Image (cartoon, rainbow, N blue to C red; front, top):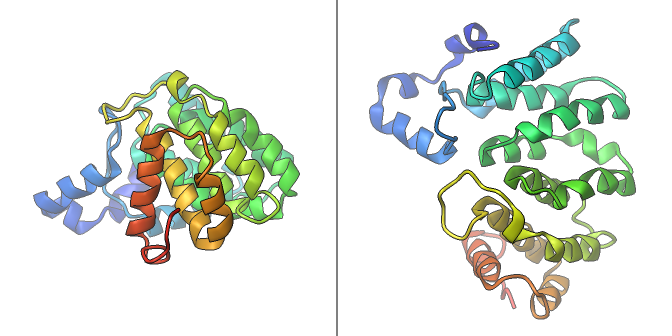
Length: 246
């Protein structure tokens, strides 16, 4: 464990003392078998990451995370894996240095909660020119690793959801090699987390650009199961539950 002593006092009391709550938390996170879950909530993890990012040895700490993962993939707890990414987000550094750290971090992603929490808190991406961000994301769309592809999708949803880039993002979704993507999760329609990420992006697009999204969905070559997930996500969201998906 990298920073377990630092995290132990922040573990949720209900996670420690209530079996039903603990099992519900573990079920929602749905980490791979072998990954420890300590029981922290996101605000506490974000605070630790911010503190780490301010420390003088933060770059050494990030390299220690890399070494720990390389030595034992499951040596890091779920929370440590996420804090690693959140610390990269919070780091004061050049664009080039951050992207360099990310190239080592992104292959580590193997869980939806880590992937999505990292992406939704990557506010540095707003300051990067969209064409540069897209160039960075593009190779991950063609990855054969489930959460590298989901990373590209969620980052696009968070930071490239505008009129200029929407057609490009929509087109890229149709090129994702779903049948070639490896998954470690025994879930329906693998890779489930890529398909669900696509549906989430499309439902978000429906909320912001309903006409453009409906026009795309009426002519897209996306698989039928992705279309069904899109409809489901749009029905679940308060922003689109009364908006026609087609």
